[in-house]
Image (cartoon, rainbow, N blue to C red; front, top):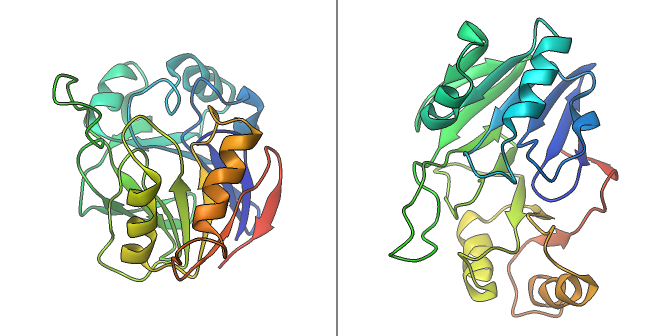
Length: 213
């Protein structure tokens, strides 16, 4: 598979001419959906989900289908069977990719802030996008998309999370609010100079691609 980062939390996965997009939110260039065959959305927060962008993409591509949780599916009313609500434990095929769903809730930000639903997607038993939660799949993960910055996590939690998932490698996502100092600092803790996570850590710039799997 070929993985391309589109900024913040959005990535594109390509295989055999098929294109799967995950979390094209309000911080994502809408062109990330050009040529998309299927879309996965982890949860309803604006940096992961854009109603306008998805509706425009669906209008441009009559065969585009979207898999997401029930709360996002309700907000995409009018698209009918092209939107499929899924939950933890479900398995489906999206544009030829095998996808398994893990998790239920967004990570806790604060007890006074209501939690929203959040699901993670394991693609082709190799690539895991957890959305905004530190969900540990009950299976081997080759490549972990690691949400490195948010109001709901600490760097220490990230270290423990990578150790728990035990992937071969991880790539940073959810880094749109970090400047160069922040990305270097987190990279230092998660990379070879840190306390050790047992996996190679890398960060792709927006538009960069890498072969995985």
